[in-house]
Length: 339
Image 1 (spheres, rainbow, N blue to C red):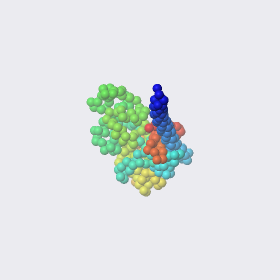
Image 2: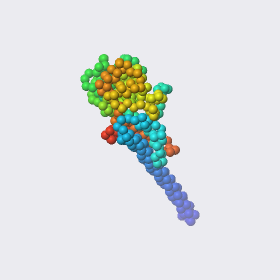
Image 3: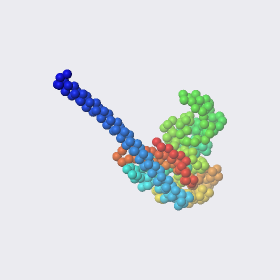
Image 4: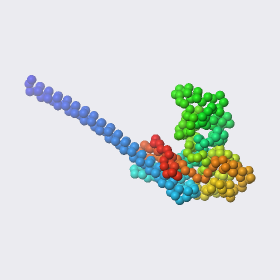
């Protein structure tokens, strides 16, 4: 091989080596970039977790303070924990912020609106304690369901938790659930999480989301008259007229829940007298209050609160949602879920 040929072969070898090394360097660069991106995403996920958790912790601190100040509810406490942007709409945390919010209902516009704060679980109807008639009334008033449809759904909800044959005419729950495409057995025990409602005959995902506003599994079954909505008050036995009187007294002069002029009922045994100081009560109203109170259906304090905190990073689309139920009396977490 002459000298020129040798130089050409060396040149080709060098070019091949340079090309190989370039491809290798490019591949290594891509791998490093992918790993850096993964590390960044993991770091952002970690930050979002701590930001969202900070919102949970702030809500718990305020709940604890409210209990220390007064075992019963106060107007100030109700405002701070029920719907208050100042406390919960934008909580600065590190490189982001947390938001503690829930889906509320504006009775003036009849629309769902975002509210800021925690939710009193004992403002709802306990699906483990409620009777079919109570569930039926709530479904009728909250969702304008017809008599037959509300009756069937109420009995389906109770049938899931109770032993024995279903009260639904012509419906055999064991056979129904066992013959689904993905079969399962009926619970025949109390609901442990509200997600179980998704397994109940007649409840779709959309209906389930609506029911969350009115149903709970926490508490003794007593409904807090200071926070319960109209459909829940009607469900436990109050008439429409008496329910209007309760809400009017509770909301104060401005006619709105969660403001500083709200009246807070303090003692359930004196509920009739307290209510009578604001509105005119008939003998029938007083008898109704006594019957519902004697049946153990109502109370004036709450122990369980649900908290939903969303964490955000500044100028980032990602978010982190943490939901929990806090037992303020026993100072412990009853439920915790990260999405």
